[in-house]
Image (tube, rainbow, N blue to C red):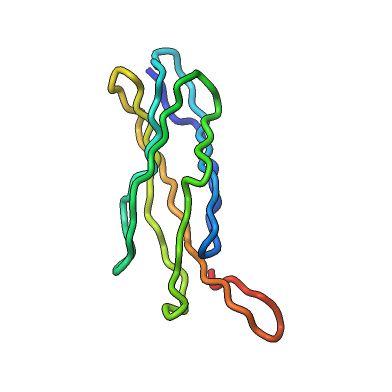
Length: 120
């Protein structure tokens, strides 16, 4: 049996940027290739959410999914949005590890006379 031990990702991301999703796993009965899915759990109202995935063909630990986390907040919204996600690993035999939280806030960057601030 294998499982996800740790998940690392940005908790706040600026609108228009992207970030990596890093998963540390452990176990012995895992068969590569392994698919990592950043699965939508809660999509903000009037948003376009997707569940990107990446296949890892060779054993590695941690697994790093570059640019898995991305967002765009329309400037009219004037607020940050919560993006509910979880990460799932599924091996070549179709066996999935228990999902782990990978939710984040998409933050609007605004410019004021004082400084650039994140609305997070």
